[in-house]
Amino acid sequence: MYIQKVLSNGIRVAAERVPYVQSVSLGVWIGNGSRYEKAEESGISHFIEHMVFKGTARRSAHDIALEMDSVGGQLNAFTTRECTCFYAKTLNEYVETSIDILSDMVFEPLLDAEDMNLERRVVFEEIAMYDDSPEDVAYELFESSVWGDTPMGRAILGKPETLVKITPDTMREYMRTHYTSKNIVIAVSGSFDDSLFDRLEHYFGRRGLADTDVECEPAQYSANSSFVNRDFEQVQLIAGFNGIDIYDESVYSLLVFNNVFGSGMSSRLFQNIREKHGLVYSIAAGHSAYIGTGSFDIAAAVLPNNMQRVGELVVNEIKRIKRDKLTKDEIERAKVQLKGNYILSNEHIGARMQAIGRSALLGKPLMTPEEIIKKIEAVDCGSVSDIIDRVLDVSTLSIAAAGPIDGIEGMFVF
Image 1 (spheres, rainbow, N blue to C red):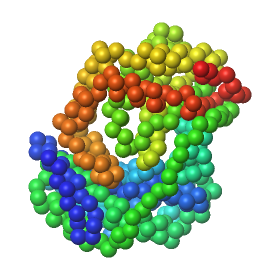
Image 2 (image 1 turned 60 degrees about the vertical axis):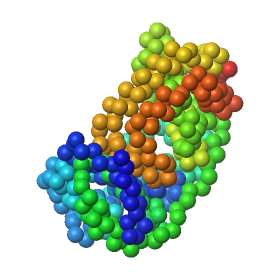
Image 3 (image 1 turned 30 degrees about the vertical axis):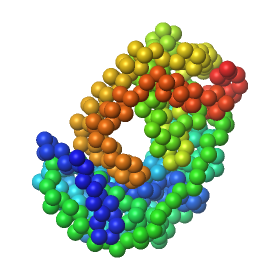
């Protein structure tokens, strides 16, 4: 059962009581990520994520870490294109510690100029680390190709040339206009009593925040292909298609289809291209859903001399599934596997908190595990056939590749 409340200043709370555990996972979700940034602000959302850990008026960076460690808790954060989440997990008796620290970090960060200069170097190191990863380079290339020079097409981490221009005042103003009461959700999952809401009101509800809406600009998927020649051992290859958005209920049919096609070791892509032909170590397909847009991609790491053959085999699998679709038995097996995976993941309160937080932030209904299972069970041959035709529309094919290559001509020919 979910409990939903609104604090005095408009911050929304979505909570789920799980009485059989001894811990509480709590997340502060901000409807803000790289998609909400102007070109000259690129990377500021992720930079803020780093800076709130550098200390507040009440706590130094060391104090924050020590206070959480002293109760055996966990504290972390992440930034995506469309949200930022600061979260903590503790034993239920220390939930007030989580609430106090998170509210202090999110609303009272020190944002010291000297700390910012130091942490900027850390972010530069993070950018360099990703730039040494073939998979990350290829995905960034794919995203910039299909969404172009828009917030959706820019890197979440930003670029050194934009990050060097961000000052404490720049960051404070950005937080003032984006960390608004209408744009914040507190998600909770675990063992707690009703005093939790009084504590949330005390630490969060009394904060004076702007109550403005924060909106991102629309994004339109566009079929484009590109490559970059890099001194990697392998080529990271991506074949992507226009996908579904975050509100599309056909996601359950997509998950069933991809369970057979490209997700996991039993999938057709893995069994044929790795197990049967031995041409790759890793190959998988998956979808990324956003507000108003999305993508479905197939990714493989392959030696340059095997690249063409892998492309041919992927095309064959796409043609096969578009022609023959899935049998009823395949669909039923996939549904059993998905339900099992979901039930197992639901045993972790951190995963439950994240599901609640994302849904509440997007204004989606909070569905119980039983309701999710029913959505999976409702998938049938017709709905799977429809989603295969939608997401494997070859007119939307985009290719991205990073590695020791001079081109991608002739790849994925239908």
